[in-house]
Amino acid sequence: MWCANHLSEKGGTFDTISDETWLSHMELKFFGAVRCAREVVPHMKREGWGRIVLLSGMATRLVRMRAM
Image (cartoon, rainbow, N blue to C red):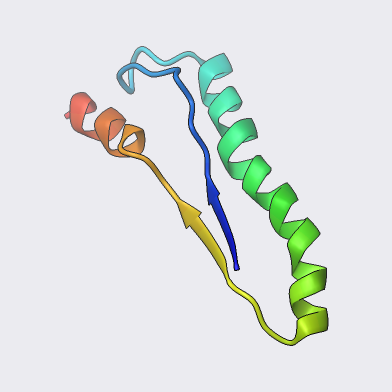
């Protein structure tokens, strides 16, 4: 099992977050998870099983809630 939790201090409301910040979040959280998964998937295939668990923090919900 591989468990990932990514933390970032950058935040704001939907309409105030810059493209640079959005890209930084995607680079850290999404692409970070993709890169790590690429590393563990071959081992899970070799073992015949495995699990990848991705956790998301409250910041995702806070941006959505603040924007409403």
